[in-house]
Length: 373
View 1 (spheres, one colour):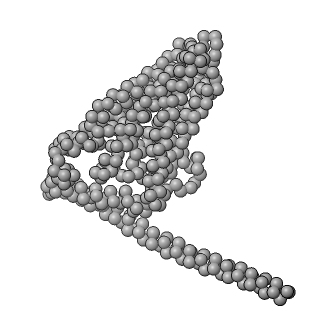
View 2 (tube, helix red, strand yellow):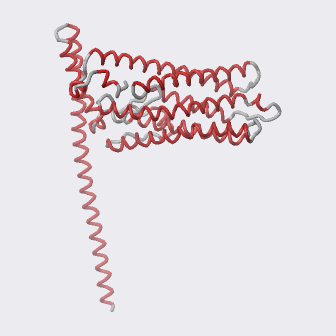
View 3 (tube, one colour):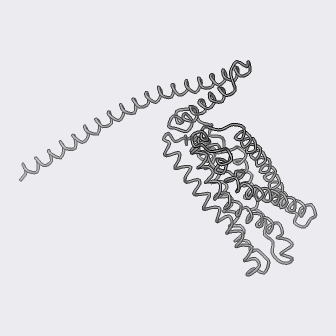
């Protein structure tokens, strides 16, 4: 009986020792694999950097030849098209992870610390973008639902006077929303998205406005409607913003897919408030966007007016009014810039046929029905 127990104990010790050896062998193999991968990655990274540098030099040489008049314009267009294809492969394929990324910025470092949020695999980057788009779709409905519900309850249930808690809960949700959007957009930008800096700054301003509004004293009776005028105006703007967000998300996604298919955008690019859908949709969205921006500035000026007139003299009213005017002006400027790019693109399409038109045998007017710049 003792011999049997001793044999069993010895077998278990031998098995445990064998497991340790197997673990060490696996660790050595994994270390060798990581080392080889790092060396190969460094070699590929160097090749990518050299190729990117050569592309820039070749583009400069072409521009210099054009300036000297030693190259024909049609040849120049074909050369630039070929260079664009090479650049597109570098920036939108798996090679993009080997190129230097945009700096993380103070905002990401402040919230996440000095960690690297650049995804090495393209499928991971695209999943980040997919989740961001889904988040925008979900929050667009909430952006419309919350303020409209508060305004309806004010008329039907609260006798024209907002209670403190529901309004502050909504303002806390706005602070969470804009902070999460800013974080996601900064991460997308690090991973190669084309997000314009203004829209990230816009969300910084919106974060500050939401934080300020959290300290806004929601005064009640007497004369509740008069004292809560600023809150009512803010909720009216938010409801209109929700309508615009729903329209934008519906139209712009279709446009981005078209641009990616035509090689005019990268898969990590995102759609923005100043872009439109197909050509007919442009005439619908742009007026809505300009009206929204005008209404945003109007609300901001009304808030400032109520503060100056002494109707609602809290400092929060002044800060929110100024931020709304700044955001409206910034949105308007960026929308006009994008509209000018669209017009220049349409003019260029009318002057010359693109490669897609030659392949499909379509005139520019037909192709433009499925395009937007």
